[in-house]
Length: 137
Image 1: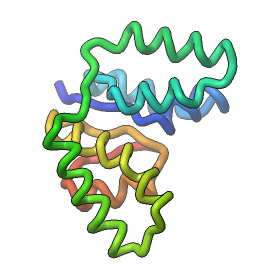
Image 2: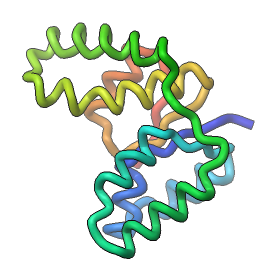
Image 3: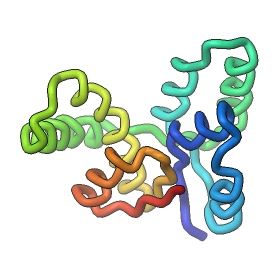
Image 4: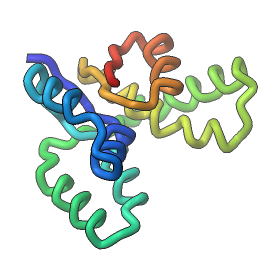
């Protein structure tokens, strides 16, 4: 069976706006879901209500095994962010925002996983640069 990492954008859309039910059902049928330490950190950072904190904490407890970026992923992310950012003319803030997506993409590539996202702008770039498969709504 194939592996999948669900990106922060899908969790947020599902939890806050009730989106992506069909997508998540299909992913559960066709993939073994593995969680990204980067995604879990992003979710925790954004959990501003008690309910959101409980939801993220529950996901963290269930998220085993949890995949994390390796030292080489961090190293490659620096190069990737610089080269893509220079080509696109990105300011520092955009490069900083792109870093987590790059780390998720690099982890997915190393593990042979698909990324499930609603953030097409950044993950289309990563799919092209890293040769990863990206799916979503």
